[in-house]
Amino acid sequence: MATKKTPQRPSPVPPKCGPCNGTGEVARTIRVGRKRRTVGQQAGICLACFGTGEATD
Ligand SMILES: [Zn+2]
Image (cartoon, rainbow, N blue to C red; front, top):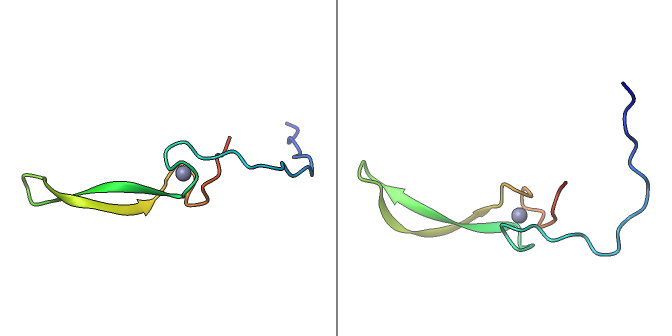
């Protein structure tokens, strides 16, 4: 199986990640207790881009 080589051509504008809108962070809902009561939100790392803010394909 041949591996696909990535061309060495940097894109001028990296595509923005959708879920975090390019910020690399997303708001996470914080829940506590067995009833999962929502106590607020906290910024967390975006799992779609792993904090880079750039969309991956
Ligand atoms: Zn993201």
